[in-house]
Each structure stands twice: as C-alpha cells, then as structure tokens.
Length: 101
Image (cartoon, rainbow, N blue to C red):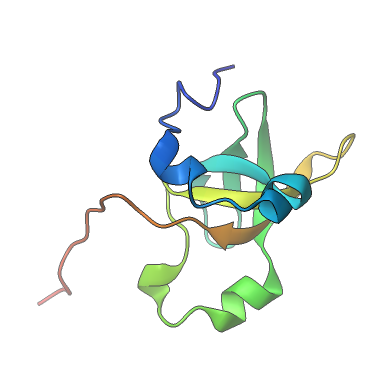
C-alpha cells in the first residue's frame, strides 16, 4: 500500500482539517466509485464505503458529491471492512464534462 503522500495528500488538504476532524475521522482518497458504493484508500488499506445520510441529503447538487480522486474524511472502525464517508474536502481542481446534447 501507499502512504497518503504517495496518493497526493499535501498541505492544501491538511489545512482543511481541524483538530476535531483529525480525532474523529480518517482522511482517505476515493479510488473507485459504483452506483451507491465507493472504494477508498487510507494509505494503509482499501475499504468499501458508503455516503453518510447527512452528507447525501445536505449536498446542494450532484457535482458536490464525492467522485474518484476526491479526498474525503471517513469513519473507519478497526476490524471492520467498511467505512462511512462523512465529508468531502475542497478540490484543488476538477474535470467535468458538459451535458449531453
């Protein structure tokens, strides 16, 4: 496995975390996205993850939901193989395509 730095973690993302964030959640990067599940990498391991209901319902638009390449904060429980995505960190850049037609 890689470290977070190998996956692209840097001070831009680190500066978005409060001490409470660091104590409560684990930073991770989304490496795969399905219809309702994600695969995230913590730098030490990969896990399947789902969006927290609060995140899904408070997101203003589909474009604000996490996608592959995004950095997120997740609830990761030792001994479990799944996680919950609680917050998407601000993006430095992104690619998007226009609407069809």
